[in-house]
Amino acid sequence: MNESTGTQSQSIRSALPRRYEIDALRSIALFLLIVYHVFCAFQPFAPLIMFIGSSDTLKNAWFLGELINPWRIPVLFLISGITTGYLLQNRPVKKLLKSRIMRLVPPLLLTWFCIGPISPALFQSFHGEAGGYMPNPGHLWFVSNLVVYFILGVPLLLYVKHRPDNLLLRLLRPLSPYGWLLLLPAALALTTLFLEPHVSPDMFSTHFIRFWYGFACFLFGIVLVSLDDHFWRGIRSVCHVALPAALTLYLMRMAEVDFGGRSPALIVRTMESVYGMLAFLGYGSLVFSRPSRFFAVLNRAVFAVYIIHLPVQQAVGYYLFRLELNPWPAFALHLIATLAVSALIYAFILRPLHWLHPFFGIAPLKSEPARPAEAAETTPTRPPWPILVGRFAALYVVSPLLVLGTIVTLASLPALQLSVDDDSRESTQFDSSLKPAVERFRGEIASRSAEENQREAGNLTAHLKRAMEEGNIGRAYILALEIQLIMEALENRGVAEANRSQIPYQESIETDPRLRQFIERIRGRTASRSADENRRVAESLIASMEEAMEAENPDQAKDLALEIQIIMEALEN
Image 1: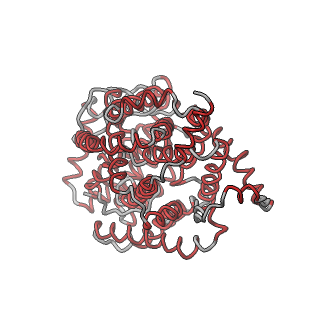
Image 2: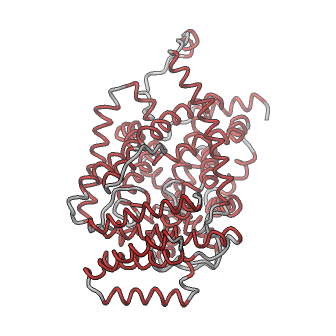
C-alpha cells in the first residue's frame, strides 16, 4: 500500500461517527460489577474476600451471580480494547499511550494507598479485630492489568495504525460474523491452556490470576473494532446466536455436567465466556446506538462512582447487617444505599473539586474544538511543576514498576499449589458458591511459609472462638474452613513440593472411602445433638485443636477443624 492510499484510508476512518454504544456498554459493565459486589456480601465466602456480610446468606441464589461471572471482567478488557481501537484512528500511538496511562495510573495509586485500605479496616472493625493499614489495589486490580496491557500492546497498536488494511483484518472479514463463534473461543482457549497452566475449570472465573486471558480480550477488541461498521453489523447479527448458546452452556455448568478433564472443561467455559461477551456487546449495540444524555452523564461519572463504591458498601454493611433483616430486602436496601451514597459523594464532592478529577478518572467536559488554524497558532502553556512531576512519575516510574511486578507475579504463578489434575473433583462438602474463594485462599496459603501459616492459623483460632462467643455461626464456619485448609497445606507441604498433581485432601473425599465414612460419622453425631450441645462440643474441639497446633500435629488439627466446620455447617442450616 502506498502512502497516499494509507492517508486516504485514515481520513475516511477519522470521519466515522461516534459509537455511543461504547459509552453505554462501559457504564453498564461497571454498574454490573457494583451489583455483583453487593451480592457477594450476602454469600458464604464474603469473609474470605474481606467483605462485611450477612450470616443469613443468599447462597441459594448464587446461580444469579454465576450468570455473569465468566465474562464480567473479560468484557471490560474487550471494551477497553474497542475504545483503544477507536481512539487510535485519530491519535498517534505515543500520544494515545500517554493519555491512557495518565487516565488510569492516578486512580490506581489513590485506590492503592487511600481508598483500598478502608475496606479491610472496616471489615476488621466489624468483627472486633485489631485493624491495620493495608495498602492494596482492591477492586481496581484490573486497572493495573490495563496499564500493562497498553504497554505490551504497543506493537499491535503500531501495526494496526500504520497498516489499516492489514493481514489480520483480511483474515477476519471472511469469518464475519458467525465464524467468530469458533475463532474467538479457540484463540482464548489456547491462551488458557498454554499460557495459564495454573488455571483449573473451577478457577476459570478467578479473574485476578487470568492475566493472559484478559490481555487476549484486550487485543481482540483492538483488532475487531478496526473492521469498522463491518464489526458492528456482525455483532448485531451474531448476538442472536451467542445468547442462547451462552445460556445453554451456563445451564450445563449449573448442572455440573462432566466434560471429562481439564482441557475440555476449560474449552467449554471459554465458549460460555465468549458467547456472553458477544451477546452483551451485540444487544447493547442494538439498543444503545443512538445519542443519550443519560449515558453521556453516566459515562463521565461511572468510573468515579465505581472507585468509591466499595468503601461505601462496607460502611453501609457495617450498620445494615446489625439489623438482622430478611436477606432479600436487606440486599435491595444495601444496593440502593450504596449507589445513592456513592452518587451523592460524586455529585457534591468529587465533581465540584476539579483538582480531584484526575485521581477519580473524571474526564474533562467536551468543549467546542478549535479550528485547525487557531489550534496551530495557539502556544500551549507549560503546566505547573507538580503536574509535570506527576506525569513523569506515572509514565516513567509507576508504569515500568507495574510491568515489572506483573512479570514477577506471572513467573511465580506456576509455583502455587493449585491442582490442575484432570481427574480431581471439588469436595462435595463445599457448595458451589464457595469454590472461587476456596481456590483463592489456597493460593494465599501456598504463597506463605510454614511459619507464617502456623501464625495465621493461631490468629484464625482466636477469631473462631470470638465468633462462637458472639453466636456468628456463618463467620465461625468460614474460619474453621480456613484453618482446615491451612492444616491441610502444612501436612501435605512436603508431598506437594515433590508432586504438585496430587489430589488435595479436600478433593479426595470421593476417592477415599475412609475419609468419606469419617465425615458421615461426624455428620451423624452432629445431627443427633441439639444446637446447644453442638456449640459446647465445638468449643471443646477448638480447645483440642489449639493443643494439636501447639504440639505441631497438623494431621490432628486438620481433622478437628473439619469436625468444627461440619458442626458450624449444621448450626447454620
